[in-house]
Length: 206
Image 1 (spheres, helix red, strand yellow):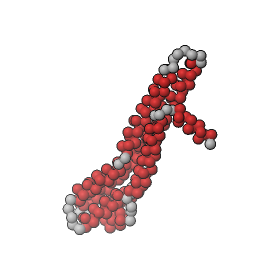
Image 2: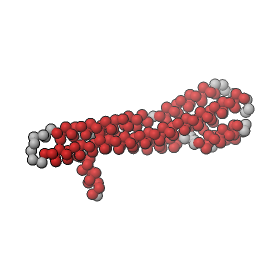
Image 3: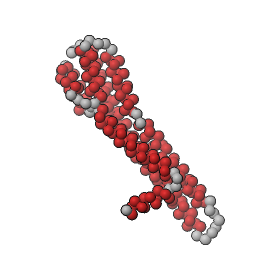
Image 4: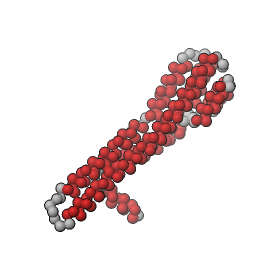
């Protein structure tokens, strides 16, 4: 209970800028949770990509199709749709895969830009709060008794905003870096499987 009260006390001492920083932290958490759940639902996984490519390297078309059909995720879905089009004799398979991949990548990148904005904005908001607090502290320079102590205390309170802004920025940076890495991994898997499937189609080993 004491820790909660102390946190609230620090929050109020940080000034008005603490409220937009609180909103930023809530946005970071909300985006991170939503993106994590979405990435989890659409990622077919590295293991699937390795096994699928291995089947195609061994000219095991039916096994690759069965594996993709029994695997969740967008990569598997694109491959199943592409392989079914091949079996139906349809053309422009490469264009179809590229189109589907572009739409998936766009959906994966959705909202990640919010984290990038907060990484830059949060420290600036914290710095703004500190500057405003320091201006308020120095504006009472009338040389009254005990004034230096009051000024020092005011500066200490003003620095709370900067510290909070940096913490929010670090949280956003960690989340952004994690999802950027997962995005790169998923794009690599999609490109690898698509390239291997195109190679198989061009050779005619179906």
